[in-house]
Every structure is written in structure tokens, then in C-alpha cells.
Length: 508
Image 1: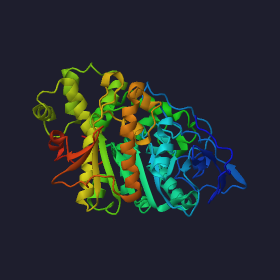
Image 2 (image 1 turned 90 degrees about the vertical axis):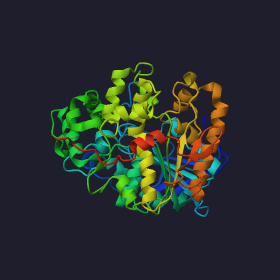
Image 3 (image 1 turned 45 degrees about the horizontal axis):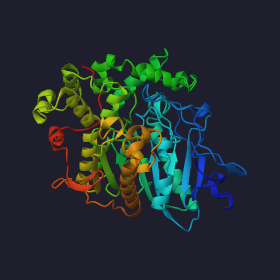
């Protein structure tokens, strides 16, 4: 439980929206639930975020703002309880809200398949990052699901990404008052949050809002405008409506997550039109619409769009094992399921043969896991790093190989294991993956990871060499970290000629 030190003066900060009052918690000044934009409801439903109106007096910022409407990530992970309309709020942890200190700033973007997520999740408590790194940490909520990412006629695409730009703009305009340096901002995110970081690197509206970025397990799904429009039509069709503002704005925001869940349960019926994404459980991704997001991140970085931004990019070794566990598939995958996955997600003309040749001793379940780990996270992350190098930029690559100890290590180095290690939080997600018997080992590794992330935010150097396409130096994050050549060479070769880009609508 957080302790409140009553003897210290109550921290108050003047922001562009008005004065906010926070609390002292364990040596930090903490502010929660500060609006960075007007609530996107009523006449602002499905609109780009609008500047927050100034308030009078002092606003107490003691509690998180309400989560945006969202559907569960899976039946095993229920959606948070929502309430209220102030979905667009930021939270700040700072060692001292003194403008003279000008500490580095880290800004977190949560994942959740672009349909789920809220910063009140205990896994995202950044207290240790702020204290250990002596820096300011910001988290914020942004719209997800239909509110944030569905393609709706008469509205801008990528409203969730525009929310992120608005939050980063708030940081630029206000963070010095909290003791942060607006010229030393690092964005970091995991999964869909890392996909969001990748998108921000390619977005003209985000240029200049951050100096560094960390992308943990980049989600490789980006939609073409045609595909997103077709999916938007199917989403609205679940309600018997058209995908227009006039039709959908009349629907209660808290009813729309059920629409996404209903379509997600039968997306495989659209495989002939939507391709591989139809075999996933989410109908949302950033849209390469030509305006908000002019091109996909891989092309943008190769063209030099992020040349001035220093990056860390990486992935876990066993990404997809988390989703297999959530779906009850561990120990259940046979040859037929593996063959289907290889055909659906693998690269080239005969991915099944290619994978079996590259991994001759791998059983069916391992092949099933490998190809989906590669398609969804590992190879998009590697290719994004290589695009940054091609564009003349700097990037540090890593792979997390430490095995999650819970359940006899069955989860391996799975997707999302990096979250408790980066934040040093071992309740909730961290507890489920790590377990109580291995906290000392996890905490020691977490200290190494946090030190690398906060050093990077402060100096641009995480402690290992930048990546290049000749020696391929990669940091292995484990109990005994080391730097070696990229360890997933077999997968790298399988995917070396594949081009990650916006997924198309299949029309023939």
C-alpha cells in the first residue's frame, strides 16, 4: 500500500488547463487523472481530441481517470470497470515538481490489441522507474476499440493515435512545471503500445514531441485504408448500422465493445477478404490512411523519418506462448493446426516446408508457436530495427530470454513478461508469470532492465552497442545479460525477403 507523508507540503502545479494538486507517495509527488483533452463524447464523439477547457481554482488529482470503453483482451483477462467520460487523462510521477530540476521524462503507452488497456492497471505503476532513475514518468489513457481505431466515415482515422499525440503535446507544454525536461522525452510501449510507438515515429503530427523511444514487442499488424473500411462496415453491421458518425454516435459507448467482441469471435469467416488478420481475435490496428499515418512504419523509418530519434527495439523469445496459454492450447496443438498456422502466417510460397527445413527437430506445437511469434512480434520488431539502420538512424536491439518461472516454466520467455521487469511490479500480471518463489531472481533482473531503460532515457545509451546489419549485436536480457549476434538467425533468414507493410483487402 502506498504511504502518504503528511508532513510534506502538498504539491501543487500550474498547468495550461489550471492548477492541480497531487500527493506525496513514497518519496514522489504523484498526480493522477489530469485531463489532457476534452471528453470525446456528445458532439466530440469520434472526433480528434480537442484541447481541454481551463478550469477555475485548484483541481485535486488523486485518482486515475476512468478507463476508455473496451472489450476484454481474452476471457481470462476481464475488461476494467468503466465509469465517467474523462477517458483522456494523464498521470505524473516526479521526484520533485521543481521546474529548475529538468529531469528526463518517460511516457508509457499501454498495449492490449488496440481494444483494451488502462493505466490504472497495477502492472503499470511507474514508482520504481521514477525513483530509481531519478526521472519523471507520465502515463495516460487513450481511446481503444471502435472509439479509437475503427474506420468510421466522417471521422479521422487513428483517433487513438491522435489521443497519444495530444498527450505528448500536453507533456511538451506542461512537463517542465513537474520538474521534467520537454527536450528529453522518451516514449515507451509494449505490444500494441509498441505498435503505437512505431506509428508515432511515422506520423508528421508527432514529429519533435519526443527524442527517444522504446518499442517492446512491436505488433506488426497495420491496416490499409481499404481493409480498415471493410472491417468498419462489418463492425457497424453487427448493430444493423452503417459505419458513419451519424449512425454510431447514437450508440452508447459502453455498448460498442460488445460489437468488437462479437465480430472477433467469428472473424475467421472473413478470411477470404481479410487474410491473416481474420485468424486473430482483434478487429483493430493502426490504419495507413495517407493522412494521419501517411505510410507504414517500416517504410517511413527506411526513408529516414526517425533518423533523429534514438531507439531501443526488441522482443521476447517465446512471444506467442502467452496467447496459447490464454486460449488453452498448450499441449493441444497437433500437425493439422500447425500446418494451418504455417500456411496462414508464414512467408514465401511454401512456408510449411521452409519452417520444417529451418527447424527440423521442432514438434508441431513449437512450429505453431514459432510462426505466430515471428509474424506478429519478432520479425516486425527486427525489421523495424533494420529499417531504422537503413534510414540512417540509431537503434539498440534486444531479446528477453529469461523464462517466466511460474507453472514450471511452461510460459517460457513469453509476451508481456518484459512489463513487470521494466516496471518492477510483481502483483497482477507479474505475479501470475513469475510466482512468489522466484521474486528475488526477478527483482535482480528487473533492476538490470530498469537501469538500461532509465540510462537510455537519460543519456541515449542503454549499455550495449547499437545494432548494425553486419555484426547484428543484440542484448540478451537474462539473469546473466550478454551481447551477442542476433539469436533468432533461422527465423531471420526465413523472413529476410518479406516486406512488412499495411495489410491489404483481398478482392479477388
